[in-house]
Length: 97
Image 1 (cartoon, rainbow, N blue to C red):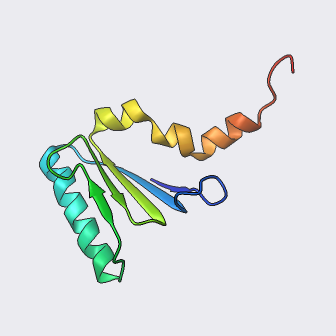
Image 2 (tube, helix red, strand yellow):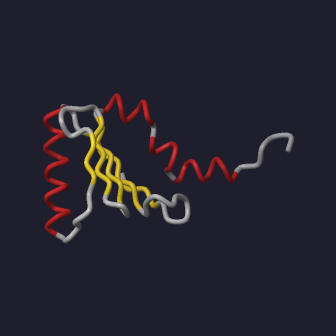
Image 3 (cartoon, rainbow, N blue to C red):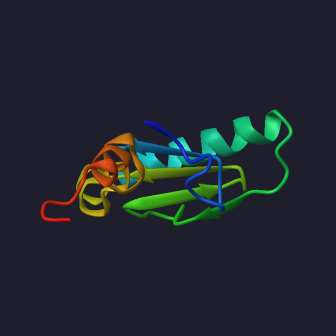
């Protein structure tokens, strides 16, 4: 899932959230993404959690990539926090206001 953060966050323009089923799969996904981003010329990149984790983060500055195991993705709920549904809920009037 790709989330547009333009005008909503100062730390990035886009957030990508994806799921892998096992530590090795997530590590391979992170390595592949890192390699592809370097191939297109991105030089500055921070990778956290790539050594066997339920959550790997790749931060390129403009794009943040989160790779989760299913249970961690559900626990952190980034789609709910940053997705369009959040904007829709925030735009709803509060009862009694």
